[in-house]
Length: 428
Image (cartoon, rainbow, N blue to C red):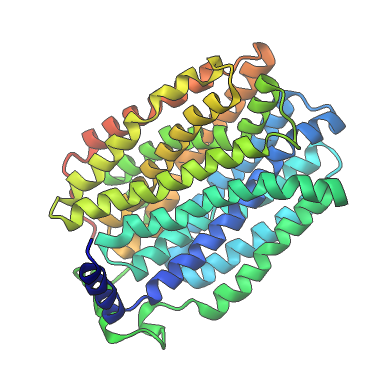
C-alpha cells in the first residue's frame, strides 16, 4: 500500500472512531487471564504428579471435573448473559473463576483439586458467552470474526505466559503461590471492566459516526428468545456439533501437551517452556489470521457463507499433519506440527464462534453460544476420560493425535450439511 493509501485508511478509521477496539482489548486481556488460570494445572502437572503420585486417570478426573462444571456453566451463563447483559454477566463469571483459581492453592488431595477445578470451570465458562455477546453489541457483522479472532488470541497469550510464570513462581514461592497470584489477576481486570464497559448507546465517548458504524446491520426485532425454542433450529446444532467435534482437541492440547513433552522428549517444568511458548505464538497468528481471512473475503464482496466456510476449510486442511507428531524424534519438529494444528484450530474456532451472530439475532446469541459451549465441553469430558484411559493402558499418544488430525474436516462437513448457505434461523 502506498503512503497516500495508508493515510486514507488512517483518516477513515479516525472518522469512524476506535472505541470498539478498546472494548476488544478488554476482552483480549480477560481471555488471557482466563487461560493462565486454566492452564496452570497442566503446566504444574509433572510437579504435582510427583508430589501426589497421581495416575493419568487421577489427572483425567481433575480435568473431567473442570469440564463437567464448564459444560453446566456454559449453558447457565449463555442463558444468563442474554438477560443480564455482558457487563454484569462477565463480572459475575470473572469473580467466580478468580476465587476458584486462588482456592486451588488450598487443595491437599485429589478431591480438593477436583472441587477447586469444578468451581473454576463454572466461572470460566462465562468468558466466551460474555465476550461474544460484547462483540455482537459492539461490532457490525463484517468485523465480528476479526474482533473475535483478536480476543480469542488471548487464549494463546495466556498459554504463552503460563509456562513462563509458573517456573518463576514455583521456584521462588512454591506451587501454591502460582495459583494465588494468577487468580488475583482476575480482580484487577474486573475493576477495569466494571468501570469501562457500557453498551454502545450508553458510552459517553462514542462518536455518532462510530455508533452508526456499529449499528449498520439491520436492527433486531425486540423481545426474548426462550432457549428451548433454539433447539429446534438446525443452525443451533450446526454450531453445537461443530463445538462437540473440535473443542475436545483444544482441551487435549491445553491439558496434555506439557505431559506429552515430558514423557516423549524428557522435558520438565524448567525446560518445556520454550516449546509451549512457540506453539502458542504460532496459535496466536492462526487466531487472528483465521478471523481476518473471512472478514477480508466478506469485505471484498464474498457472501458470509463463502467467506466463513473458505476460511474454515483452509484451517481444516492445515491440521492433518499433526498425526505425525508422536513419531517425530525432534522436539522442534513436533512443535512445528502441533503449532500448525493449534493455529488452525484457533482460526477455525474464530469463525465458528462467529456463526451464532451470523445465524441468530443479537438477543439469542448468548444462549446459542451457551448451548454450543455445553455440548463442546461434554465432548471434552469424553476426551479427558479417553486420554487418561489410553495413557494408563498403553502409554501412547498416537490415538489422540489421529483423532485431532481428522476432526476439523469432519466438523466442517457437518456444518455445511446442516447450514449449506448459512441461512439465518427463523427466530421471532
